[in-house]
Image 1: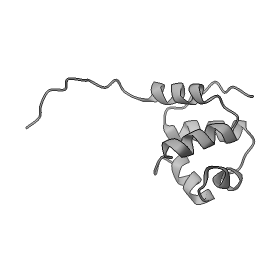
Image 2: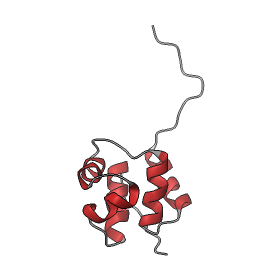
Image 3: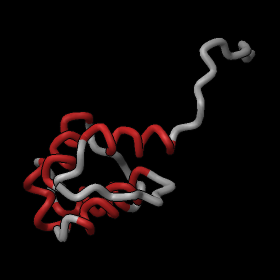
Length: 88
């Protein structure tokens, strides 16, 4: 299992990095996660994101530990304020 040290700043970049590290093309990984290669290309360009199930399948297809993929996502998220100020 190859562990990737990601430098991604978007979900799409994380997906592209892990796919590239696994040596897979968009045409190869698409069927592995249940989508077309054009959908994969859209995700990698930031024009959509995989579902949770597709994300798990992506981690499996790229042989990345799921917990590290999730940590990669968490690093991309801004902290969420559990008590936001109401807006009118």
